[in-house]
Length: 377
Image (cartoon, rainbow, N blue to C red; front, side, top):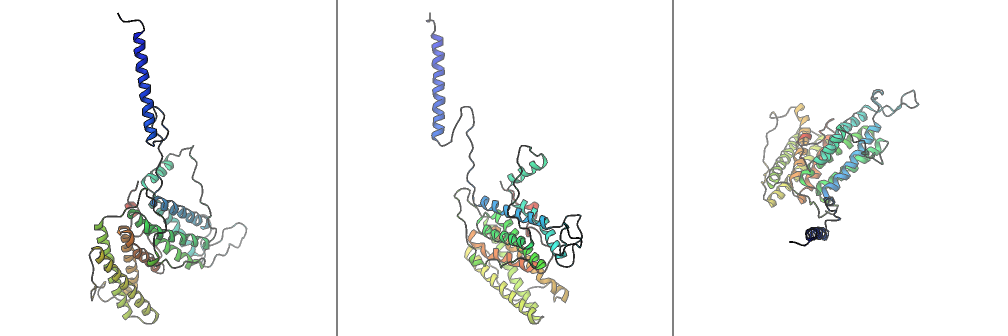
């Protein structure tokens, strides 16, 4: 017959062993670097440091928010008077009445007011967009709203300066971030170039220096080892660099044809453009040859819209050329290896500058439809 108390001794021994094993397991987890561990609770999650994509994305969003805040501050209220055909004179009543903007300045601000939110959305990751949508649909009363932008300019000259700052940051980012982000970033930089030049021309305020040349577009930030950037498929790169060569050779030929039918400064402008496009085509041809991509030789003759263009068609050709080149180079930036992007970054911004003097509207994301943007996590 077993001795009294032996069952209690076995239970005590069993509990003691479980306790020892649990404590030993917790020690192993702590030694493995999992941070503080509470028994029965999951380990505390520490997010990894941001990669280069997230670092640039944060800074770009900050500048877009600053620009948008400035635009909304400068635009007249919806109930205000109609824009004037002159400068920025105030209403005769004085007092607190907002200044009456020149109609061209008001139009440029209205275009920015519609484009900047689209560009902001294009920069958000899928997770960020989901959180913002959820907060908008079902606001959390315990969640503090994001702080308003700081250093918001109060005049048009200051807004032009912010747009130039945004353009230049887009140049730096497009050179270093992943291809899926580089394409919308380059598109935003091109549109910002166009918008800044139009606003400067309409207002006479601010300065818009030329975009940096390709040879000076180099990496400007150290790339963290965490979450390194990536590039697209080689087949996409080959297809886009082939298209860019074709567009550049064609643009050079068309400007040569237009130069033959014009005189004076207009002729000189076409000859200058012809030379620039021919040089770009040759550079792209060399890069394609070195990278094993399709090369496109120059043709002696290219077909023109409608054969020999009449004056009306001829006047539209520079716009058609610049638009096609802008789309081709933005697409190439998103597909090219990092070290091959500089030429197309410069080309995209240059063609956007050409369009600033030709068209009054430009897609917020040239070469990309907002709903077609890749969804990043």
